[in-house]
Length: 245
Image (cartoon, rainbow, N blue to C red; front, side):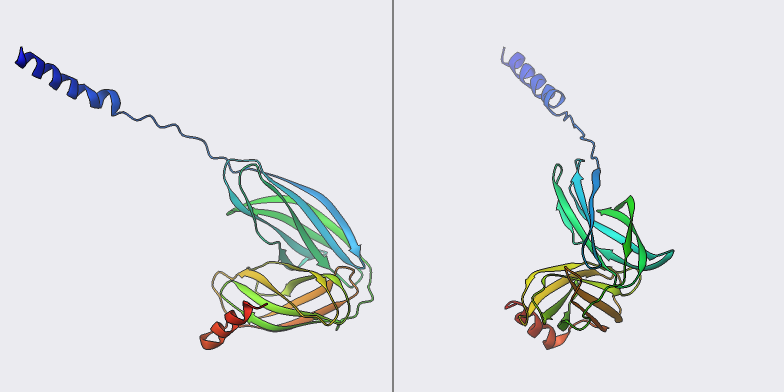
């Protein structure tokens, strides 16, 4: 009797892996998908144009999204401007705003693309018609520039109450990524700091030209400087000073 029980127990133990040891994997198909809609294009005032995009993550994969506009004067590419990055989980949406200022009589075409992770989606192009503007070109000052590994810190000072100021590069190394920056509620004589994130891939020192323009297009400033990273004690002093901006 005991021997029969031992044989039965052994047989049961041998069956356990067969019954419970097989795992069933259910694979959920990952879908990278986006619904992007061009929702608005308008002249804010006096030669400052805007373009707004509704970006909806309609897939099952989270990603970082941004808009790139390649600016063309007729068929000649002038520069590329980039939005800041929006982090979108599945089912989330965001509105991405882009700006461009043009003081001359020109017809500008903007080729729009959505970058989601490392995937690229073409969006319909935009055409902007500009007339020559009367702009105070030295009304906004850009100074206190500090360059770090992934961002540029700058200080803006306006001579007049300007409200919103848009800052972006118009000349920089081809292939690099620079975000636009927007500063709200700028008051005359009161300095404001902001930062612009960039990705150079392989960094090298090079000249860059930034422009700062008020939302109404009346006040404008420009700065050309050598993009050179802070290093040594200057870098740590700069980072410490940034804490108080």
